[in-house]
Amino acid sequence: MTSELPPPPAAEPGKPELTFGQLLYRFLFFDWLFRDVNAARDLFERHAARQHNQRMSRYLPVYLRRWSVLAAFDFCLGILFEKVVQATLLSAWFFTWSCVTVTGMVVITVAWLFLAFARMP
Image 1 (cartoon, helix red, strand yellow):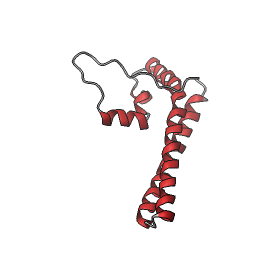
Image 2: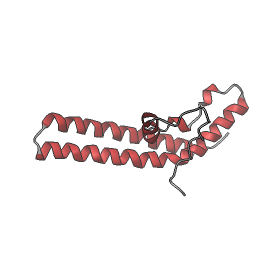
Image 3: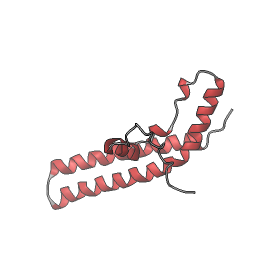
Image 4: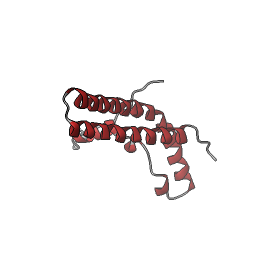
């Protein structure tokens, strides 16, 4: 199984490439990969959107790995600022962000489990 994400659609001749902010957003957040099932007009579109979402769920472990690195990085910076620099406010800042990233990891894991192991009716 490859861990690379699908390439973004090729830029049209008159359309600019992705900006750094858009690229960073796509690197950290996965909502751009999925289609809204509730926006489907009929049963066929809903089924197609759900199948698409289940196929795209194979990329969620990549995002989980990225968020794991962020959580570990934030936690290590929190320890560094608490123990070495004695900066309590900065350590609290990084410990808080490590909690936020762990919460994001839980959301990614639940979404992956529901999409990857769901049975189609």
